[in-house]
Length: 356
Image 1 (cartoon, one colour):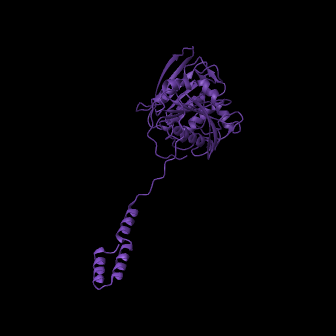
Image 2 (tube, one colour):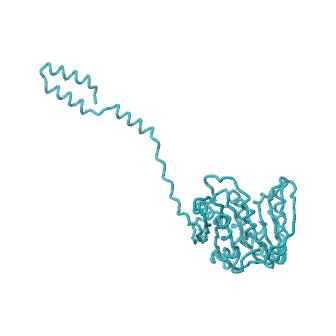
């Protein structure tokens, strides 16, 4: 609107001169003219307004406590079936997550039954993820750890498992600073490789009846190592320190020679500055198996490797249940020991976004 005082004065002068129609037109134009200051204020308000933030994507529904669900996960690296166990108790807790990789000829369900992990998950409050290898990827359902592209970050099976683990963290509302991985036989080797490839994702690793990360790039090399041929360590001058590891191996294992357990200590010694201090004790399980347990500590006192040799046991999960394959019920409880080892360790809070 134009200056109302000036318009009124002009209209009054016209009225005194007897020009009533002209005075009315002046007032009409004044009233119909847009107010420029209001335009400027609106422009200033628009310029200073903050852009609207995009809405956060909706989280998938969290599995119910005590549920054991089946799922299929697709990523750019491939697809995997899985089982996920959410323990009983409060649905509002942020729980640790343990990834369990089965051995050859096993399934996720068979491995869950044999290790008894779900029962311990209820007791200790842990989410358990069981990825399952497909028969199309390997006719014997072995993880293909011997192939070079399955031994590095960002490719193959390590990337698939890492992506699935992140999905399980989101789905189960797990604590991302308490994520661990374990496996048996081929699954144990794969667990060691994946933990080394993703040290910011996995805090610690458990290996049962497996091999360490060595210089293997073919099925022939893998079979020779399984029969007991010493592995060559990676050729690089400096070896990255492995994640804290708990290791189980039967000294009567006819599938993966028990001498492969020595590779884990050799890798630790090469990757660590200063001496490794070892402490050994003997014991006997409730089922009658004798065992030797050795802790390997750094000079600062940190246990980086806990190694169990189960005397008289074969290629079988120590302390496992008879209802499943590859178990030795007479041995000490490897599942409980692994969870005890894992839950004593916490990682650093992860970065907001992790890349494969």
